[in-house]
Image 1: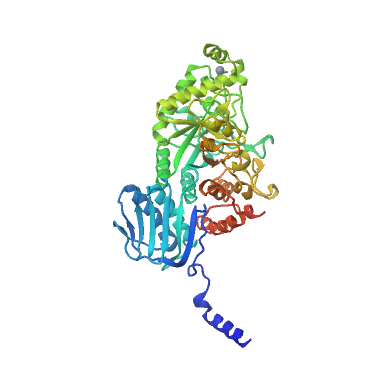
Image 2: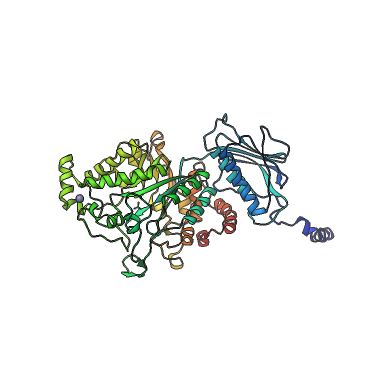
Length: 540
Ligand code: ACM
Ligand code: ZN
């Protein structure tokens, strides 16, 4: 008894020196997305302002990678490090080594933290960038001036499971300012997403400057009011809204994304979801209009006329302006939810069907999409579209984004087309994530954190060979009921963290409780960065 009292007294006296303040204890290794392998080791390494950051290449890309690290050290802990060029590590240094001889995948990295120092190695700068994201998560998730940043000793070997790790954003329904898009990219980078699918045109707004067709943004970016409340409410807010990105904005965003190893995949919707474009240029619709930028949600009968040659000229002109702005491999042409109502009645559409020997309006859509694909391919791009592009026959080299469940993706993979899985049930971040009674108005559905975390992008129906056509998966963020950046953040986080793990980490089984515990730690960073995540998402 005496001994216990003595220990308590000692504990009490020395408590201030051995307290559990986060910056002093050996932090746990809690990373999202979970790296492929993690070996915990004894001890820690401390980064101080004296710690030398050494790089073995002085390329601009390498500078960008390291400046991302230094910015965070300075922002969170007021630690400023000197970066020097060196072919080899020094004692107690942080050595960032571009090692093109490493035979691991392009985006993979090896990170070793020991009492002697830190070694981060990768065969490409993207791998180094991801290694730095991991290293940043090993640091205390606090914003406070520190004399040393204590990092647990650990050996990490990491590589992504999929090459398409996407997050989408619909800026058609609600325009989001450029400054927010930059933040969106920052947050994506933390989670090792590498594709930003930017849904730029919609019935409710055309959001990108096209110099040859100025009315697209002068008229097509503005709607006179917006539906208030749920679909079918028939009440409107009476407020005109607009917004678009100039081509200079786009250049800035694409470059900002590239610095974070994120490729921007633009989407220009065709032949459906095109009412804003038709409002600007009514001669491109079957009836000739007049049309009005949509003020409510849903699917509209007025779509680009597939019979008029002018439609193809217009779209090719639009693509001609846009292709140089987006250096990525893929261009998204939409292709979803295109009613055939107007085409069935339109003499020019009927004539086109006759001339081309097309038996149905589905075939006409296929003809439309294949013409656009040909143009994209001739101009060095691959085409991707929503799974409706399968109807009437898939364009020869097209990739498919499977959203109406997985069937479209499975069919496409079996036909040896590349596929991105985004089934609504698992990947639609516009669905409610907690009890709708207590949540801000959303479009509907229910996708709790646990469910998105349980998603497996490669269907068991596919053979091993067919599975190779699954490029990855993506979270879709439709903004009918997200009027502000704050609301977008609320719907996207923390669910995007679960998806990030699904697409980066090795195939399950997954331990949701373990994920939640790691996520709780990551939300401290969300708090510091001001990410407006949904706290109710943690509830069962
Ligand atoms: C979609 O959700 N209409 C692709
Ligand atoms: Zn027509």
